[in-house]
Image (spheres, rainbow, N blue to C red):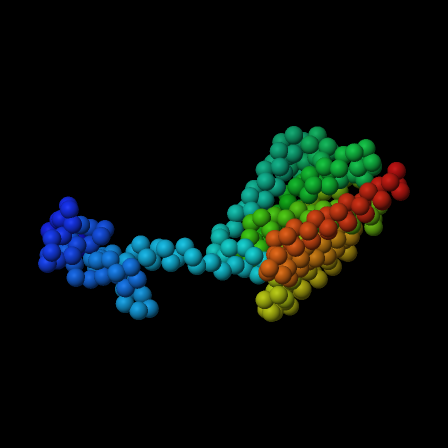
Length: 291
């Protein structure tokens, strides 16, 4: 309910007249801000540690207060955005390949799949983009469903801690790590594809985050163990790719959450760049040896 209208003094209040609110000249008031001492009506005052301050002083004081950050240096409270975008991108690309191939189960026959899948021999011809593009392809709906469910449930929690930009960096570096491990350790093998390396990287990231926060890591370790065991039992699954993504994702996240606060951004950028350089160098050496 607004205050009743009071006197208005265009040229300033005459001597002895009641003061008026600086923000509402039509309202007489006997109250003042304890910080700037300007007359203010009850609507324009906020309770402070000592007395009351006007809304202008409160806003000025708030501007100088630094917001807290997460253990990775991100602003807390943001809603996950990168995770659903990645899921949507993977699903959309699967639908595109299925439409091209005219088959959901045999979508790997599509032209896009053949041009983007990871083939070591093609890297020797300069087609290095396959390292990234292969991470967004999937063999059939079951392969897609498993990876996207894991990405959805794990990715949202990790993104909340790392922040959008850092989360995306860990995801992509883990994807490269999985592909690099598959190439360097397993050697030539036709048409690798899948987001498993990146997803395992997020599992490794979650373990590191929980350790940094001193929270129980048992359930995540059990989940990782089950998935690695399934990879051993199913011959077509690249266990080396999973392990590569897991290790690289954990290492990349460690760089982020253990970076010194004084030079956090520079340390994080240099650490992630160093990991990528090592991975690319390892793949280049392997491709040169085979080729």
